[in-house]
Length: 85
Ligand SMILES: [Zn+2]
Image (cartoon, rainbow, N blue to C red; front, side, top):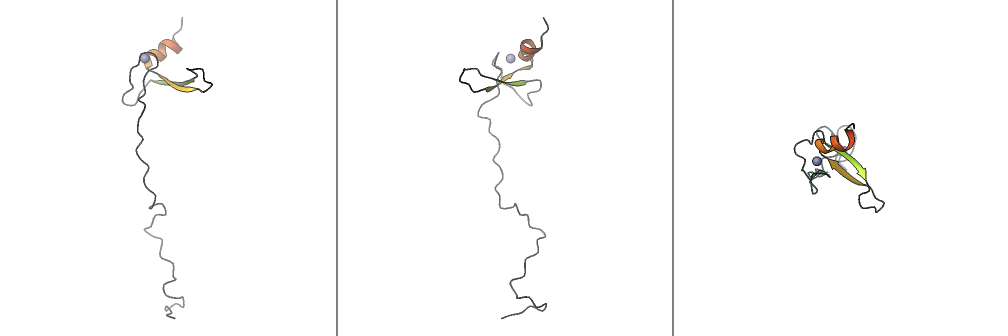
């Protein structure tokens, strides 16, 4: 048996961890795909950029007991939810 100078068995010494990332074998997450573009429930306008001012809410549109996420553009959100009559 080959013995290293410090008495441990050669080849069984643990490798230094420096420079190794425990997560390096993980594949990177795929980019988020927008299968469903964010469109306004009222006017059908598509959101662009950061969709600033857009509002999302849950509503059971088709009465199946499951809430859907619906989006409203700033103009429609203002008219639908924030306009003071
Ligand atoms: Zn709209």
